[in-house]
Length: 179
Image (cartoon, rainbow, N blue to C red; front, side):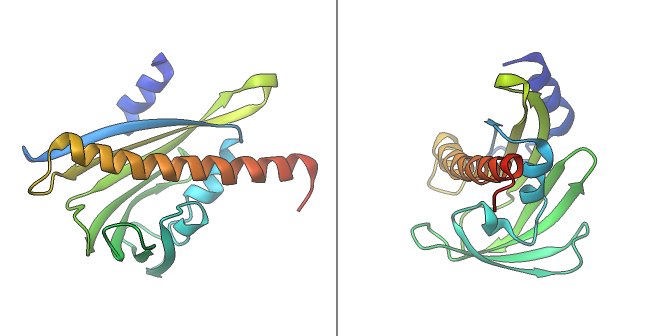
């Protein structure tokens, strides 16, 4: 891993494993779109369904400030129908969003995540984005740390792929001026 990514992780992705039965991981995705376009999607705590394919609906309770809670409906196919999530951090200058799951009918207990965006130069000298997402979560009874991390990583990877697809489509529209 490049030194810059290690530094971003060290600086922005601090998770304390508070209990023995927790797991944590960090994922990295390169997106061929500038930070401002990617951030315009990620920062929308009130509209995660714009790029998260497993979310069908979101209702926010509050004013988009720290402590605001959202109720999300989860699409069928996952072992849940809803999740209650609290906004922990929204930093428009550093491009960092952090959430904590505080309820729902799923097994992701004590889940918290941090997502940060960082500019990078990509092919042709254009500006792209490095997205880093990290999490910590309790390991449910009857599962191993590896199984739990694998499941959460698969969900995050799917979300990051969708974020890349939507962002890159918006970047092309932005460059060409097409709707």
